[in-house]
Length: 198
Image (cartoon, rainbow, N blue to C red; front, side, top):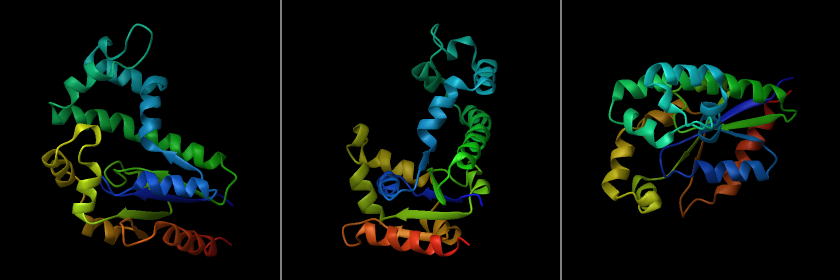
């Protein structure tokens, strides 16, 4: 029987990475979409060819590395460019995750992503685990991280899927704030998932 695939998602500052780290410690392997997407942008031939078609040979340095700053300067000023890059990269990440999940021997595997529904990665998972906290908690966590101001954090949050929508689309939710210990919530979620395995 193939593993149950669980997506770990949530807004900026919710603590997805903390939950993913705890899952890993509890024996659940986690596929990190951000780091894999970065790696695939250098190693995947289709992505390389697509980016070079869109933006030119300068996308990559002479030693084959992605020219991130150069590319970012062109992408983030053009919403259409962002959409085209996402349309190129997201399906490859999805395919890479499916291959990775199929090779695992564990009963439960997870994937961490901030853009689960936007990237259509939800089509490749069985269950969705939402990590959430109130807006002020999320803002205070992110404020100052990477030099972000409050207004920058709020702007990022406004571009994400609203929490009430996410709550309707998820199978499990863990609240990650000072009043709600995380580990018992994760253990309970894993117990419920394990109970669905025949």
